Image (spheres, rainbow, N blue to C red):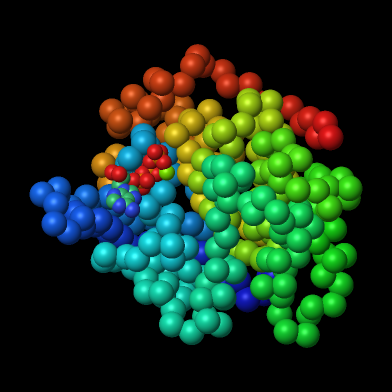
Length: 280
Ligand SMILES: Nc1ncnc2c1ncn2[C@@H]1O[C@H](COP(=O)(O)OP(=O)(O)OP(=O)(O)O)[C@@H](O)[C@H]1O
Ligand SMILES: [Mg+2]
């Protein structure tokens, strides 16, 4: 990424974002207001967490930001460009896909079972590499594999030959191949054991420090959020009910919903996670 073209303004800005899922036609069901007027900004070099219980609208917000879901009303701006409506031209759609990459909870379902790991990374490199910048893609794929802590022998492996943590490293590698400004991590460590979770969180922190990438980190796990995020917003029923600097908000939650969420986390004194090497 060209660092110079990154202004001082927010990377992502959402304003009064709403999403209504209409009731299926011919049913007596009611429309679902999944997101009901959400506003926030993601700043350069920041990790912003979105927390809230199941069904509060976290994923729907993220899907609107990346264009996987249409916006009912409100605006989404990414790096100063209005992204509230899907771009019509393929080139613009690609540019949009490139700037914000999405890592899902379950990499198994988001990886093609027949595609080798190297090809997963190469695929995204090819899709997003600038014209005239296509030489040396294999070397770059290997460099990315290395950056996510996977040995080179994984290049020719299939997803089913990997552990859950290793697959999530591949999902992160695929995102990095697009050279994004932002990575949305939607419950990206929720399915992993605590020790593997810690490794992936350390990896994410390293990547963020090395490549100027911001994270939108969606989670219901406040211990994880406490460890990785700078600021957080708390959602309930499609609304932002609390927001602030993560450490302050969690140390002294004033909003009843944040307090309730905080109370659901075991004990005081979350231990800082020690760096562990990948057991491969
Ligand atoms: N495609 C859809 N059609 C209809 N309703 C939907 C659709 N997607 C989400 N919803 C509804 O929108 C609301 C918000 O869902 P969303 O997936 O954004 O919540 P979430 O905070 O990500 O929850 P979780 O923590 O369980 O992932 C829920 O009531 C959900 O049932
Ligand atoms: Mg979700």
